[in-house]
Length: 479
Ligand code: BG6
Image (cartoon, rainbow, N blue to C red):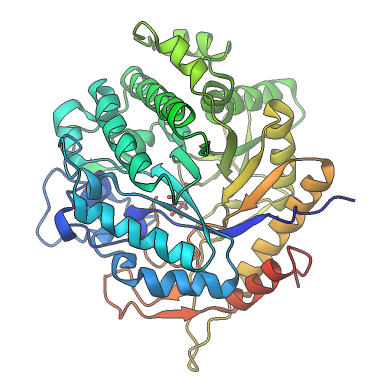
């Protein structure tokens, strides 16, 4: 019976805007996430045009990876990491996104990070754009609504590809690109928020603008992949989808159809474009019914075909249900809500926990595309308590991860080609949806609190030693 391949990429994942801090160090410019305040499930975080006196902007210092990268990567190496997924902050390289010459100090920082990875034998997995963009591009062209963003993004890609060509093989173009298929994408990934100050939930969504911006991201992603394939044949280019698996709430045909429709537009739409290279048939009716018309330029269709990704990656935290009738209880999530599943328990943030759903999802995706896959985010956001002796006994996190790894193993036995697994927030970082620090995912604790206090000291949690054994045994020892 098959099990994880020998070169399975065990590791962990982070993102610059939630982890690095040093928001204005060494020439860095402000990004969209630098303009976001903290929040909580009850008080959604806000994006502001100007920095507000008295407001707290958690990404500014975050976990300060910028000044702790050596220690952090050494800790990852101690756990036996084979890979480290992180993102490059566009605004470290091009502070407004529009400069002609890159910021050398920003480039040098990622050289140091990549060299530290290499020193420890860790394969970098680099996300080019993870939930941030230069805020100056929001002001200039309403973020990705402006087609000129593609050109600015390509300057950035050309620069980092050329600079890091000898150090990075695996790249992901846009984190959770399908955020753009949901209203939350305006603030999180598209930057279509020119002039807006307010909560991330109250933004007045315009699907026509949003899908146009998403189209520009598709073209940018395809161009980046094509550039890589043409000029850097050693690169492996991946997409990244936030997969929120949908089940019909009941076996009523209306519920089944509703689940299928939601699966199509939330989960399949973007990867159908990025893996198959064309807009899927079902999008036509959705666009028509929602007043969406995509303006394409000559050559876009060909470009999408020429820029298909080499491997498929996704985040998996939860599943939820769909019904064609109102009234069922709502469960929560990072990008959108869904209906509660009576068979599942949920996290303290009301994200439904469904390990078997991961096996199901891996099979669904693989049967559709049959290309190598990677789970690049998974994990349990929880409040951790530091005991008097300094220990952090996160057995709940171990249980969550163990159950998901067991199901990944089943999917591998089913025949799915799985390359690796990088649980989210391997070192505690700022939550993307709420801006909290207290929603922790890490196997390494960071002494940093919701109000910004803390020493930034790193501590190994119980899950640290556990994951170390998991990696050393290539997923065989899970207890
Ligand atoms: C994914 C994002 O949606 O989920 C991450 O790619 C994010 O950036 C992660 O942090 C967990 O979500 P949250 O809201 O708990 O931080």
